[in-house]
Image 1 (cartoon, helix red, strand yellow):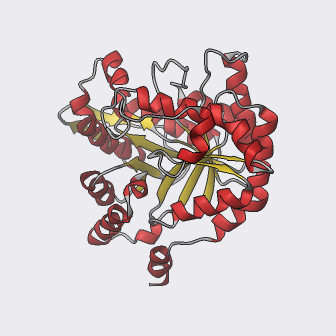
Image 2 (spheres, rainbow, N blue to C red):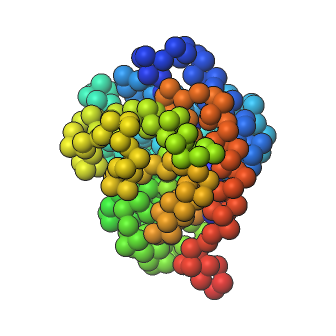
Length: 352
């Protein structure tokens, strides 16, 4: 299993750090993650968020590309309905060139109503815009010239003169239901997030891949999670609880387009009680000693076929020294167990 690093850039209004310093801290975290052997660094995108979640992934990843040399970098996710697909394809190609062929693109339909309202996009169109936009992006990567006439975009004689450095730039698509995983499988792409909704969805994805002539062993399944590791459990919770609480309450308070299991109906306990609530939370987080975090993470990844795990170590209010110590402990004690694990389905497919 590939173990990656997820950096969601956010700043709580009560924090003393400037937004510039927050960006710098996250970029420095990725540099440290590369030293520790994380395979990927993924950045998330949101728009108009009150905690200033980063809206511009490509500039951030370009800065990361210039500070690193080995770790692969990617979006997780680019909310494609909010972007012009030709612009996304051009930015992805340039970023792949700047990074020396280390870029991976993950796209999704978007989940927050506020983003669609502010961009004046009908949220009901999000999946149509996602897949039409995705097909355009893929044509930009693979065809020298093409025309497109669809429901949302019409382009005559597009000539994409700047291509990615990689012959086949890895593309991931966030999917949370049967229709989505079928669409991803039909295009022969990697799926992000589907395994969080149960093994049946991943079994459907693999079945659809085979039906369209693709080997599941060649296609990734990505999973995200929050993590904090410390030398003892009490210290871990003391360092992480406030940041984890912010993330959970932020998600619970949003007006969601999808994933309605959280929107406004998730009763998040106070930080002091998050330890007891962890097993019941629909949004997973893993806090504790190295042994505790390894056990809970392995239990989660074993629930379905997962090839990639991306972990968020820094939440709002968290001290840099605590974040780096958590990353160090994780790399030494937890990462080897995760890397050694391989889902039986993947193994079987690889042996054929």
